[in-house]
Image 1 (spheres, rainbow, N blue to C red):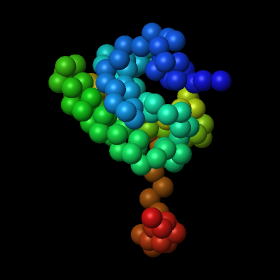
Image 2 (image 1 turned 180 degrees about the vertical axis):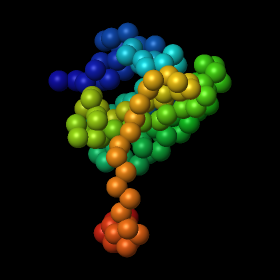
Image 3 (image 1 turned 30 degrees about the horizontal axis):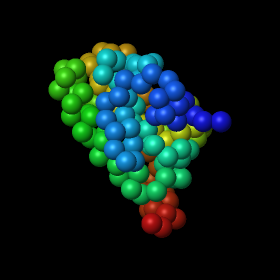
Image 4 (image 1 turned 135 degrees about the vertical axis):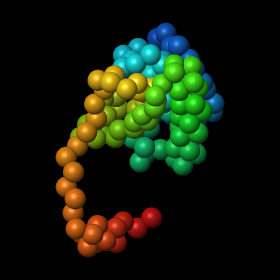
Length: 133
C-alpha cells in the first residue's frame, strides 16, 4: 500500500509543490505548525534515513537548506527548525523518509525538548569508541 507521500508525488492527492529534483520533492504541510511549514520527502519510498542511499540523504539536506533560506526570508521567521525523525520511538509519524522545515517565531508555542543527562566525559568517550563510521 503506497504511503501518503507516494500518493502526493503521484498526483493522486493535491500537493502544493515547493521543490522537486530526481531524489526528493517538497510541499507545504497541510498540518502546518506555522505558515511556511514545508515537508521534504524522498521520492523513493525509503522508510527511514538509515534505509536511504547517500544521494537521497544529501539531496534532502540540500533541499532543506534552500527551502529554509526562502522560508526564513518570505515568512519573516526568527529562526528555522529542521526536524527529521526515524521510527515510532524517534517520533516518526509517516513511514516514509521526510523532514520538516519549520519557520519559527519567538513565542510561537512550539516545543521540542528532552531531559538532559549530562554524563561524565569518560562515558561520552566510551560511547564514541563504540561508533565506527
